[in-house]
Image (cartoon, rainbow, N blue to C red; front, side, top):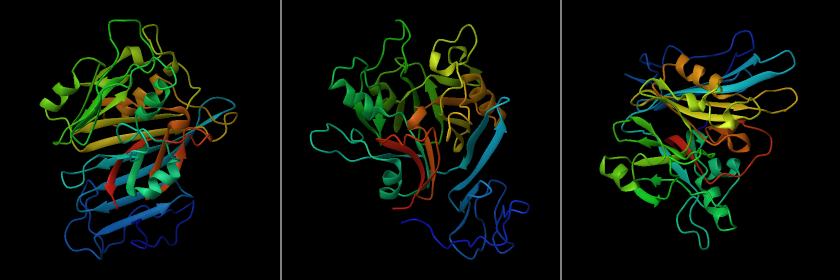
Length: 320
């Protein structure tokens, strides 16, 4: 169920927002609860000032909303979530269950607001949207679904041939491992069976990968070597995830609540921001109307106002 009443926000204002628990709560440098505390978790939801926080013994989440002047006429608004997870509260997928003749979970679409209501979590971000690729294949689309693994089970195993002409999405992969590490790869670098053999519990397929072993993917940026045109421009909202070290993640969603007043983000901006937070692995998720971030069962930022239905999300802190 959703969290409520763990911490009553009071005395907050634009000039003096509450950004931390009172002295009776004890947190370490990562934001985990330690020692004796008034409860099992501490929660702050300050939408007016753009700050959302959660702390327990197993999970620490801090989300901050930023607004900057992108050009003379438009601003850029985005949320950055810094997450310290653990073996007891790891990254996990939210999947819409199978409906009708769906071959696997995650093929049916649902509004993000309903999805986070039905599968409550502390934090959730839109994912690789593989269900859309499956659905459109049934109506004639030619793209493969990509290598998709959820909770240790192969859902789809057909991907692109990386030696052929680049197409979008490139279906690069981000694999998640029990030790909290994320690894990004080119679409066909490993097979689904090989991912399982090396211990991957979840594999997401979209891309392009942005940072790998600390090195930037120039094809995912905006310079002359850039391949994927969608990341060359600031025309869309974005959703990306990066790893600083195992169990330490950065999630960013760039929103466009008004396309005349707000700008999206290109590959260069995303990579620079992820590097600013120290990410050594980073991955581009589906953007535009798909992109969104939710905290404690409420969507707090969207890629745009289309409210595109989702098939699944990437989450932390299962509240079911």
